[in-house]
Every structure is written in C-alpha cells, then in structure tokens.
Image (cartoon, rainbow over all chains, first blue to last red; front, side, top):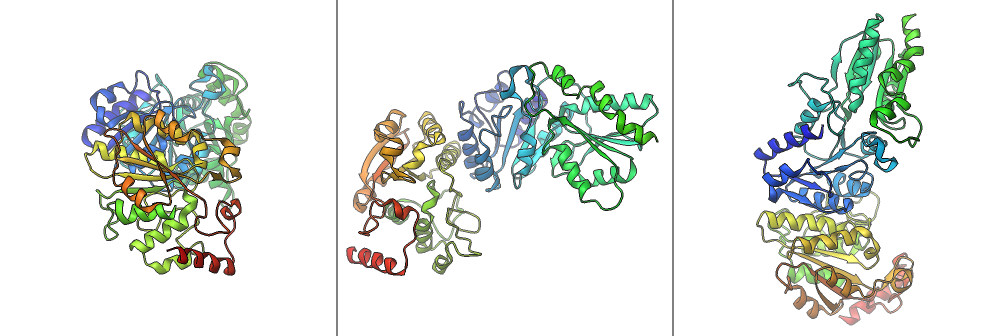
Length: 310
Length: 238
C-alpha cells in the first residue's frame, strides 16, 4: 500500500506545486523518490511528531497541501492535540499518513500496533478518516484526499498486500465499494482485512450462502446509505477490522443501526477484543490468534450464519 | 506583554487591517494564548474589528474567547491556548515564506512556562537548522508560571544561553522599555540565516502596585474597585 501511495503522490505533486511531504525521520526506501524529485517540497523534521504536525498546519495556513508521514501511532497519537487544535480547528489542508495500520508491525511489539487510531481520528471534528483495503484503494484514496480540502487521515498497511480490486476500480471518498454482491448476509470490512473478508465470502458461497462484501474504506464520512441498504436487504451484518472493538468500523456501523427504527438485522463486530494484543508475531500470526484469519472469521460467523440459514 | 504587542503592532509588523489576508503580511502568533485579552485590545485598537467587540470579551455568544481564537476574528492567524503549539505553527509559516520567496516575517510570543513543553524545543531545534531568519521568538520572561516561581517549578536558567546554544541569535531586553523594544525588534533579523530570539524580562502585572509579580492575578479578575484603582495607576504613569 505504501508503494501505491508514494507512486500516486509523486504523480499528484507533478501537477500541483502546493503538495509537500513532511516525514518524521521514517520512510526509508519509500519516500526517497519524492525527496529526489521535489527536494524543495520535501522535509524531514527529525524525530519530532508534534513539531511535524504544527509545521504542517503552519504551512497549510500558508497555502500548501501538506502530507505528514510516519508509522504506527507516531503521526496520530503522539501529536494528537496538534492534530485537533492546529490542524482540525483551522481546517488546515493537512493529510496525515500512517504506515503500519493495525498489526502490520506485529512482531515489533505493542508500541508499533496502531489499534485505536481510527476511533480517535474519526472523533475529531472535520477529520476525514480513510483505511484502504488494498493497494488499488490506497492509490485512489491518496488522489481523493489530495483533492479534498481539509484534514484527512490515511491509514495504510505496509507493503506486499494483495490486490482485491481490478486496476482502475473507481474510488470515491465516503462511498463504500461493493466487492461482491449477495443478499444473505453483509460483510463490511475496512483496511487490510478486506482480502480475508472476500475469502470468507467465497467459502460461504461454497456452502450456498451468498455474502455481500462492502469495502468501507472511508470511516468518516461514513456511507450510511450502503449500511441501510444492507440492513434492509440482508439478514445479518458483520463488520471486520484490524482495530480495537471500541470506536472503529464496528462502532460506526452500530451507531447507524442503533438509530434505525423497526426491525434490524443482528450485528456482529469482529475486531481486536483483547485490548493490548498479548502476543508478538507476524501480522498473519496475530490475525490468527485474534480470530481475524479467514478460518477465524468463519468460526466466529458460525452462530450468526446458523440463524440466517433458518 | 502589553508593551510587546503595542510595539509589534504599532511600529514593527507590516500589517494592514483592511487586508488581513494579504499574502505578504507579517504574521503574529500569540503562543501564550491565555494572554488573549491584550491581543484582542490591540487588534481592536488597530482596527481589525470594531472596538465595541471588546465589551463582549468572554461573554456568552461572543467571538472573543478567553484564549486566542481565529474563527470569526480578523487579524488572528492561529488559535492557541494549549501551550507549546505556537512556535511550530510559526516555523511552518516561516518555512513556507522562505520556500515561496516571500518577504514576510513571523513573530511569536511565548510564555516562560511554555518553555517547559518539549514541543517548544522541537521547534527551537528546527528553526536554526532551516535558517529561518524570518522568524522571531519573544519570550515573555516574567519568571512566574501557573503554580509559582519559574525558578522553583522548573528552572529555565540560563534561558538565553539555551536558545543561543540551539542556534538562535539572542538579545535580552527590558520588556517594559518601549524604546528599547522598538529599536530591538526593528533590527530583526539580528543575524542573516539565523532566527531571532528576544528574551523580554518582564514583571507580571507591571504598573499596578497590588498586582505586580503576584501569582493571584494569573487567576483572579479584578472587582470594580480594584479595576478603578488599577486604571488610575496606569493612567497616572502615562
């Protein structure tokens, strides 16, 4: 995803002189091409995320479109108040990019697990929050946020994620992509777990159950229309995310359903339930232990799906 | 503080109340956003907004808050109030000016208390590295912070030496001496390719006998009688 991001950013910067990239001394083997191509629009502020974010706000208030870039929680939680006061309150054109969303840096330990970022970013007034599901979405999201005035948060994976979509798939902020049609159950994914979610749907199909799969890449503004459609057209809704159970995709969908009158389908939220992930390991390993692998998701769905089949 | 603002807006900064968003205007950021009352008075006096707005300061429904707020207030560049934010924003504005080849300067006033904030020193490292000689920091060094004497809470000394060692061109002045402030601030940058730092030695509540150097007046607004006495003392001194 980070490769797709930087490729898109390079292209955007060719045509828009306002675009700057500021990094907090991270981005080895990713951002160098930008630095070489646009040395006067690239800045490494050192290991200083609060300053990075304040500078980005100051530059944006001087007419620039500024991307800040770091990994895990460093460009978000470390400088949260700068994001709230300096970026959001000023409606500054700052795009915050984090690499390693969720458990992408699983083996590096708790400090590098970005597992509450979406909850916190989407709570901030004026902040657009996006978690692309594959490199195709990452590229579309990069272009979309560059063209959208105001604060945005872009949560990316790392590198080597498989494509889910065909190249050229249309990406629109705040509009979920229907990856797979189906009227029995709706699976809604955000971020890198989209791939596993599609695999789950394929497994279900072998058992005669057709799952609709929505890629809810934008958590804010949320595509309530597609959620309401799923609520009226399918018998159960399941959310899948590599994020805390609190405040992320599952919460966002629950908020929509809670305010919906009348009969509504059961909601199952698959997310990180254990607070701090208690183990160390690769992203795949931790997805397994947290029940977010393809088999893990299928196991969790068994009870839900039995009720659907009835 | 009042003298600093009066000198900046009266005889140093290039600002035009009729064109508050002119791209070449000098920028001012009051990083110590709690001193908002003084900035509001200066902006009103300078004509950025009608003077009678001041009567609404901190009142229900007012656009003038107790900490600096830009929304709906012409002349305010950035909202502040949480300490340690202003200098980074100022660095961003100064850097953008440099990269765009513009001639504007960026002035910011810090409190001594906010020199406790790590983010202040992140920005203090940044500005000299990028040779931001269009950036001016003024530290309102009244040696008293929220809970007591700076020396007792978290000593900053040697403060001038700290800024100097970070690469700033530093001058120390009497923050109540208007002519000294004017001549000093009119000379920025003190050195080419270096940001300027003015340590303004001040006395909190200067000019009001019962307020001077008293922590209490960081928190308490004067009652009617105290206000009358304070204004009398200030007018007598003019």
